[in-house]
Image 1: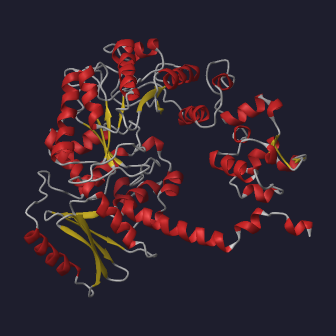
Image 2 (image 1 turned 180 degrees about the vertical axis):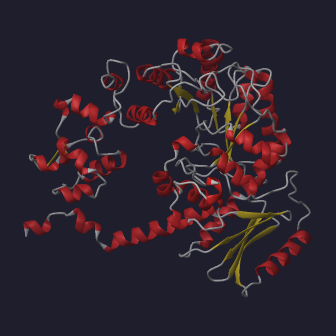
Image 3 (image 1 turned 135 degrees about the horizontal axis):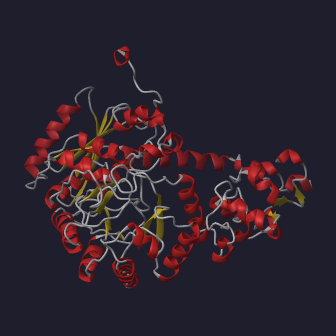
Length: 190
Length: 380
């Protein structure tokens, strides 16, 4: 009896309560990753658009985050896994938080329609003199790498490779860094 | 040069600068803003060397009048491409990357172009566009040039969440060996005191930091520890950063011997032991060997435990946080969890202990669980 009353940390950990915490942590983790790794496209009609494919239902959380971060912009997210289109804005003249189901492959059309509406609604435009190029980030990213300090173990721990999509520059940079032998061909020996 | 080429040169120029987006007390404006600082800082990406890429780290210009022997941008460097960002160009580039969610903020440094006033003014111009025209409210870390004007320091602090001024070396003599154009006391320490005064008035939301090059002029770990201690105690420094000297090509020290990264790593451990593990300064000093350096073949915390056998073993169930944190293999989170748990319950087995994140193999010789202690060679 006395033995049974003794508190055991292992048993406590296995309680359902702990499982709930684990699920919560997983969801918060996914939401956090989406907040930091979702890359957005900027349209001059004060529109920011991004594509995500979450496993849990965390889109609302992510959308709220971006809407708070950019209160003068309209945020649009395309949930690829369920073909849902989300839109949110904290603007006083255009306050909205909504989602709708879209048909397959109609995302470009949806964006164009939204841009037309926003162009009519807002007078202001976000025009920056420096024109964006995807090479900006990849160039900057590559410039920060210090070759003698290469530490793939910690890099993989911080940014697991299974999480990186092939579209991201980081995926290719990590792959190149992992290659221990240089690409060689017979031509080099001739 | 176009913006992309400038970014390659001036971005690469800051790769040795260390900074992370830290927690800031600044409250972003409610309306008409772009961005806000993330509550506790966040990393957007990581390079293959494991360091995070969360701020747009760039130099305003890589043209510099100083002759720091280790630096690729100094006047003593043999080969370099000189370029400069225009304030508008850099502000727009920052906005482009921030709005696309690539970065959390900006870290802006510069070579000393002509004199520190000109270099600072360029940074101020950029920040004025960024903060006032674009209403940018993201995280900003600005580097203050040695020998800066007091008014300009104030202006830079107004625009930033965190500022930093590099000490470069822990002692005046070593500093003099590395650079002949800067005065250690006047250009660096005096400015750090000014920054501290402004910090005490609550004008810096995320404190100020400094960075030192490790071992470029034969400095010892004892020098770094002494300087670090006085910086934390007297100058109110938030944290010190270290960068192991790397003999870069085309600099006067290119034939010098690069310092092993382990030394930098151990200095960071000492820094943590001082700030978070609540070790006393005199306790840390005992770990330093006769040559003035930390032994590189043994972890500083393990070294401390072996030198102080009277303080061990520690009874896991009856020890405070301060005692637990001194045990090798028990980290901050583990010590906190154990000390909270043992207030009401008892840890009875080793498996339970492992569940708190304790590295048992390291901790075993220094702990007791319910009166039993590792007594066989097996555990070793």
